[in-house]
Image 1 (cartoon, rainbow, N blue to C red):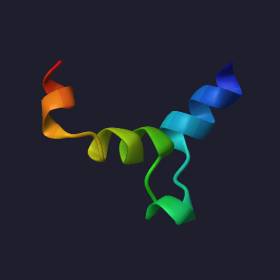
Image 2 (image 1 turned 120 degrees about the vertical axis):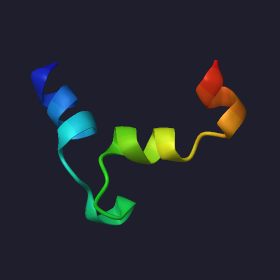
Image 3 (image 1 turned 60 degrees about the vertical axis):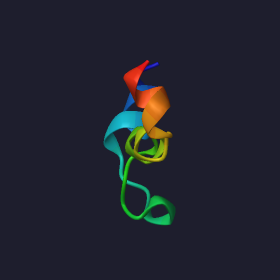
Length: 36
């Protein structure tokens, strides 16, 4: 599980504009879903 945390929350990905998968996902959620 430690690797998955690193991969999704800490490691930037060039295909995602150097964002982590988590950052990319949450930055692209519609505003209404962020409030829930």
